Length: 230
Image (cartoon, rainbow, N blue to C red; front, top):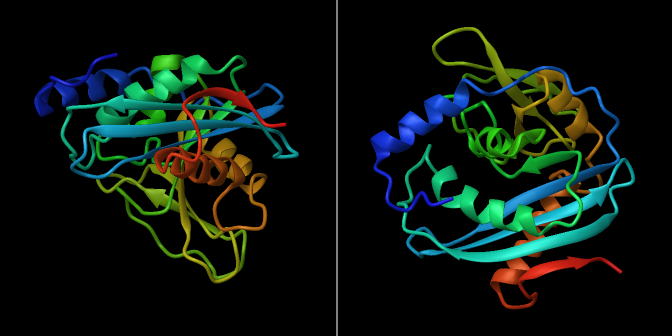
């Protein structure tokens, strides 16, 4: 997929078309594998490093990973980062010998100004159950959850009272995470899945593994391609 030569108006049109295809129906199948996806790049560099790490579920043991480096020309524009990141993630996705049941993307699902963050964008293109889990809010009205681990409050659309995600405290007294469904899962599914993916750290294990793995790749400590964890 080549987004390199799109204008912002063309990208907006694509987002609005994708939004019409998003499904927020409950996820009903059994989850046995879950993956995290992350991207690493410098704002002004054309090189994008993408990684997907597949883990067992609910054990959260790493099983396999796919790493790719892609040259992109689409500009760094907030709200349109998917057009820089999705092509690289698709390349990594296509390397996986077995696709996970659920993909957690370091980014946003429907909690996005046009309702189509990277997790939703990727989910519709691949017909994959996806959700976003981000460290910073991008869009929506929020209230801080209680300071205790496990506390959550809704993220509301700025223009109406629809719930578009969750502000979630994964550990006692740490900064919250921002969760939203991307595709083929409900609002409740997205929160439940993340609750089950919290280990010792603030970040859920799928995106924590993806983040750490991509950084090792970007610093030449891991090679591109597909591999399994021994």
